[in-house]
Length: 574
Ligand SMILES: Cc1cc2nc3c(=O)[nH]c(=O)nc-3n(C[C@H](O)[C@H](O)[C@H](O)COP(=O)(O)OP(=O)(O)OC[C@H]3O[C@@H](n4cnc5c(N)ncnc54)[C@H](O)[C@@H]3O)c2cc1C
Picture 1 (spheres, rainbow, N blue to C red):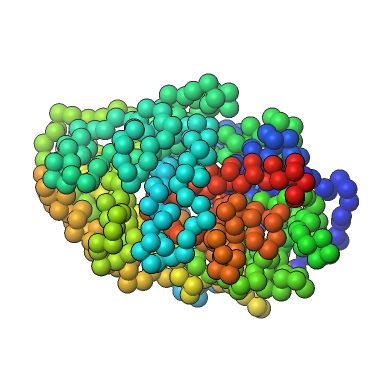
Picture 2 (picture 1 turned 135 degrees about the vertical axis):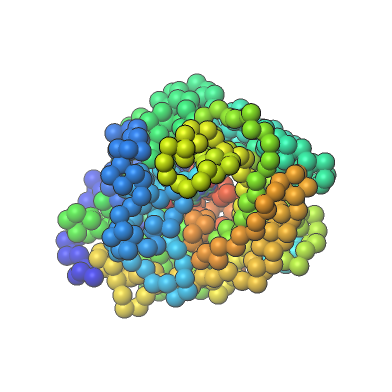
């Protein structure tokens, strides 16, 4: 670790804004868009480098043979970066959008794979783009079935904001009328392939309450004018999304919300700016700004604003708040109840089932479909019916193997090469995305003696899977294998990967919303109960994890909170 930065603090009027947004990823982009559109002079602080749409996608149009290692990382890199190399989609074509292990240390009290992308755009550049809505049950069931506190809001509070977000980012999907996975404002879905169609039909025939349908994805299958106005175009089904899309075919804050905010003339983005802490003024009884360290010069700068949006991603938001100490809040901003950093949770990604399907060898599919099907949650929806709490969704795909069905002798020579010109048989997979129970002992806290290169305490992660998760895995494996068998699949194999939490990249909580300031940190508008001009709208705010991919909920909550904040400013309340 190097020495902490020199103190050459600046505070001046030109450092004052209406709003500060910490982080420029999925949720920060949305805060910037909404606040700028409403006329607020907004400063987005981003610790990483700048990334501009198209200009900074160096690998977007490269062919496999143009990569030095044909897409693999060199052994030396893998040895130096064992953690980040595990991330889904990480490779020679995408490595520049992930951090390197040694540059950003943290302390794993229990194994936790913290996957991060520190640049303008954050993880919105590399995310998987699955965008299902939560149902009303995900908001109510944790309290109803006794494994969580009540959310201060329900599905009806968020539904209009889901629509607002879906229309702007462009989400493809089908209106399926499924209770466990509400419909939204959809562009047309990609086609199901023939094997997916068969399995979907067979599951419906055998299990009336189970529906294998299109999942919902942030892809422009048929762009509306609003998307064209963003400078984005139709998804070309290249499935190279994580390199950055030159067509703007999927949603990222770099291709969508940030340039839109910029056009208002109200946005300033400051890259290379690590937020150290939020500044609290005891006399005023509110936050007045943030303390930032310039990562190039190590200069310490204080920016002021009327409101502050915390969008640094779940665990970094916890870190900043824990590090925001004052005489009034010695244990972190808003942390009167001592629960800041606690009830951190994640999603259960530990299991999958694979199989093959005979036949259909005269059938193929168009392009490289970047989407999958989903089996909406069918567990513990209306009543507690299993030996574990919570529900799960199942993602599903079917594709033709790149290798020949009948393997020729050896894996070398002309016959082998000829056989590779034909696609192989059909392969099928299903994988788990499960709800986990937020628990007080699953927490993050700050190291008392170890600091990073900016002088900021290192984060300690103390988070683990539990028996409830194990029981869910067994149920998923049994049920998924049975469904595939009833659908006519062969060679069914169950897999448990035993991965650590974090690798799901759906970490959340630590600054949870709730009705009661004694048991939660945030109110129904994502304001800190004890410091109303600080809004937390990234995954840190989550009261429970649900079973659906979470990021579109962060976007909806951010848009909702930002518009509320603007109203409150106009009324003179903030
Ligand atoms: C491979 C992959 C697949 C995924 N698939 C899906 C999916 O299909 N569906 C889904 O819902 N989610 C998915 N996710 C998760 C999704 O990316 C995150 O939930 C989402 O990006 C969180 O948004 P955010 O704004 O909180 O954080 P981010 O998008 O990570 O943005 C946070 C930003 O804050 C910056 N920052 C951090 N600390 C500071 C600081 N101290 N000062 C200043 N700036 C700071 C970071 O550099 C970053 O730019 C996936 C993620 C990955 C990596």
